[in-house]
Image: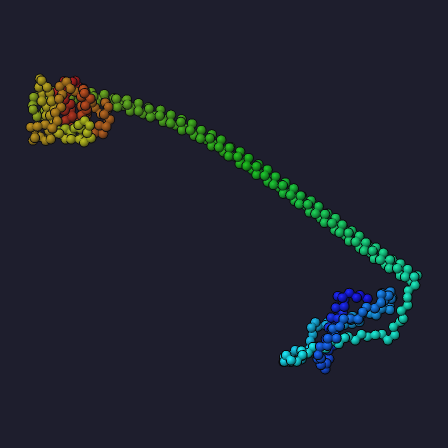
Length: 373
């Protein structure tokens, strides 16, 4: 029997608990005043030879019949709690602690001491049972370890298969990527070759076009040169005829002007462009023919002939009387025009109202300057 103080306190607490439950189940039990004797220590333990008694002679623990029930801890009488508080002079009622009733078997067999053979037999039986339990535990542990090992092997196999599948998938992806890269590189090379071929063809076409254009330009230049040469020859011929006709007209005009000796032949109207000017001025001209110096006087009109606006000295000062094709192409569009070029480089441009007026003016200028047309 266990005589530890903790075990005694546990038994006392269970005894009080069972007493409270039985009292709560009996509503006719009245509370009683606390008795200090109830809290007295338990009786002394039995003799030590009690442990040598057989298991069949020991009294069973009768608290087991109450363990199956569900005891309520601190289950007190509600009527007691519902009563009003009593004066301080009266003692506080306590729930009566009644020890549990321990059922005792009517016919308990007598205690028979075991013989050494029985003890040895039971000891061997206990050893065999312990050995069997150890062997069962070992078998269970072995089976558990075997199951764990098989699960580990299965897991490793699954992992190897997954790794192989992953490697196979990776290899397939790498192969597909390599094929895709090779295809893209081949397509890029084909596109590059196609661009190179197109560029070569474009260059060839451009070269042929340039050659064709060069040939056409050379042909056009040759035609233009032929046309220019023909035009030059025509113009030269026309100039020759014009110069011949002008000489003939000037000769006739010279006879008319100087044979009559009339003063009205020495005056007239002309439009002039002074040097370093763009504007054309219409002027009334007269000539002074003398042994000392010949002059051409230009006036604003025929009524104001006192002070000339411009005076052109002519005697020995004129270099030439030029037509438009003699370096004055800007006069080609102006009819009856010519240029008066001085020896110091000054140039006067003029045009008359008619061809006859132009011829008369050229005759007067040549006569005054002393040059031969």
